[in-house]
Length: 258
Ligand code: GLP
Image 1 (cartoon, rainbow, N blue to C red):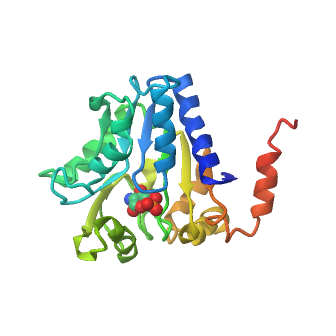
Image 2: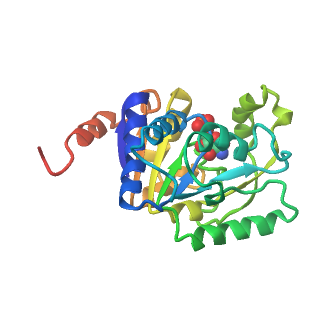
C-alpha cells in the first residue's frame, strides 16, 4: 500500500492523474465510482479535464459501489442521483455504460447477484476510487463484514446512519436502515484502487487502515492485502499516523532515485 499526504488541491490533481493515465492506456477502461464528499474535488478536476478535451470517458464504463435500499427512484439522496449530480452530469460517459444498483428492484437479492456478474462480465474494474467511513467501512461494508463478501444487501451501522444523516437534513429516521453494496471481495478484485480521505473525523480509520492489524472490525484494512492501492489523505486525516514523516519521506524519494 502506498500513502500520499497533501492538501486537497494536490490530492485531487494526483488522483485525477491516475484516471488520466488509465484512460490513456485503455480508453475503454472500467471505473469504480464512489459517492460521498471525499471524491468531490477529484470529480471536479476530472470534469475540467473532460471540458478541456484532455481526457474523455466516452468509451469507458463504470460501476458505482453501493445504494440505499428503498429510497424512491429519483430521491435526491439515492446514490444514483448523487453520482449523477456530482460527477456523471459533468463528464461524457455514455449513459448505458454506467451501472448502479437499483435499491427499488422487485428482487433485491437477484439485483445484487446480477450486479456482481455484470462487473465480472465487463472484464473487471481497472481503477476503483474509494472513500472511507469514520468506522473504517468502505462502500457500505460495515465492521464485521466478511473479507470475501460479494455484492449483497446489508444492515447499516448506527454510526454510519448517524454520519450520513447530514445528507438527510440531520433527520436520522430519514436514513434508510438497509443498503446494497459491492462486497469487500468484489472491491478487492479491482486492479488498482485509490482511497481518498480528509479531515480529523477520518484520522482513526486511516490509522487503522495504514498501521493497524488486518481485522474485519476495521473493514478497510483488507486493502493491506491488495497489490496496488494508494491512499491519498490530508494532514488532518494523517494526524494519528505514527510514521507520517516516513511516509512523506518515501513519497518524495520514489525509486528510481533522482
Ligand atoms: C458512505 C458511502 C461510502 C463513503 C463513506 C464516506 O457511507 N457508502 O462509499 O466512502 O460514506 O463518505 P464521505 O466521503 O462523505 O465522508
